[in-house]
Length: 171
Image 1 (tube, rainbow, N blue to C red):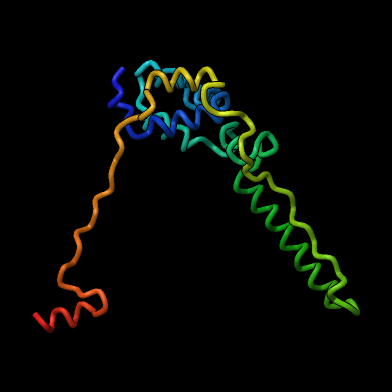
Image 2 (image 1 turned 45 degrees about the vertical axis):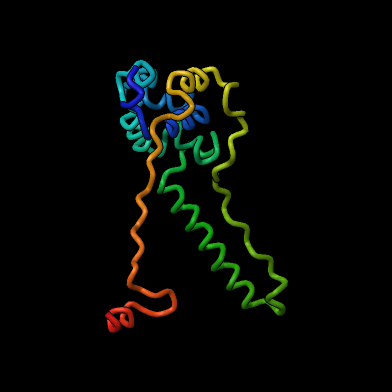
């Protein structure tokens, strides 16, 4: 297999497969008809598989898992807007009740509508997952070449305490 074809995104893909492998495998098959093992076999690049994962719809098992688990299934943008509306109505009601109360500080604030938030994965990572271990062996520890960021050249004409205008006036 050509490791250079998968350089850059391989480590990220391995991490995602380690954390949410079952969900990703099922969703890629369900929504796109793609087998995630095709990347392992060299038929797809890591960039392609990551692009497919990144465009999964909100009702996918992968998106639900990344948002916190099964309780996040069915939570799309519209559901979050409805939860925000419930919170806004409760806040407005709280303001009106507190305004009418003798001691507004005694009025209990409403709790926000429960939402599925992202939680840390409880699954151990690394060699305990045989699929992840096989991918690590195939790609290697490096996962592709490291990309160094270019350093900007220092400006030699600007003194540390002065400004560029003073340096230009002196020149």
